[in-house]
Image (cartoon, rainbow, N blue to C red):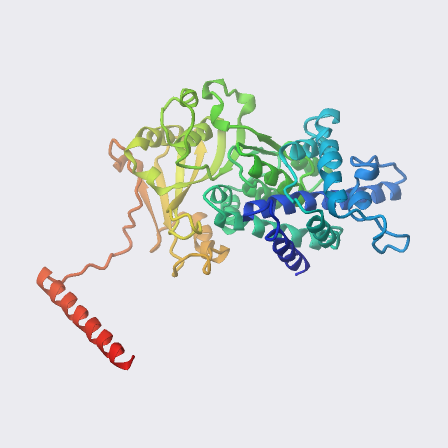
Length: 481
């Protein structure tokens, strides 16, 4: 609970900070400070391990730029050194004019663009300190300095709470919801797609890197050798993100989860011409929840065989092109994709070039505050679709902020997925039965919808009765008042 109370205390300070006004600002400013403290502990751990092995460890962040020097100097007995501790205007000036510029320079001095040093430079090239009061900054630093990241339990608790903070961004405005997918849903998708060590995992609209982080956690449990560790660290996870804030958070999130130098690039995936994708670029597994309803410049539309203004449909074409033969995907998309006339040609392309073997239909409320219904498409490239298994999730309650989706809700889906058997919630269709528009709408044949068998006259009489009852109740309330 230490992390939760600390994060709450930091948010309370930031609410009184002139430079921060939303949850987006809170997570951004907490992130860079948390990141520097985490790095200091990480480097101290690596230094100690190297010493025990009789080796020397060369720190990335050295001298006065280390957290333990500028942020939280200590006396010989380990207690805070209040005399040499910067605060107020001095602290703010140091952060803005010395610390940030020094960290940004790592982009130019790093030996490789895939090194942690380079990632630090990338992150701080995108960031700026929005905490305008050096006194508020001192309070926050003191809180963060109480956190420890030495044990696996510490790191796990921190990442869980950090994910929770990321989730709150969805309530901070329209943009927040673009980069948070409920973690129980992501874990289920990862489990079903089952990425294996040695396969590449890709999310070209990675947001806060939820899919990549969960895939790493899932695959890490299967590690059997130091070679496997190296493979996961260097050659497995690839992401791209267009917007600066989610890009920063994605990079930090993966580092917090244990990927030392994430292969996440800031850029617009849709700006890439599909015809220029080569075999070496393709990936084994794609996990994604692409943004929908956005807008792109006219020249971006020229990159796609099927011209569309819907960003999610552009991403779908990218997914199909980027998968290797035999590659697998788990994609979250609005349920209108299944029947929208504008997507008919894209559905036909998907069925022709991939085996769309499973459609998971999600109830409204899964994406809190978004007000949209979604489905998850599971497909494999290189095999034509002949049969599609549907599962209609029915958690037995209305989902929302107080009743969030959990993994137990998805347990039956995971169980039935293995055999793709029929049940009250699942069924299969033959692709040959589809019309020319390839309409894939969810039509559960195993649920009988209750119909109102009353005549129009009976319904009207019932409404009149209900209206009369309501008027009578109102009259009695007025008498009591």
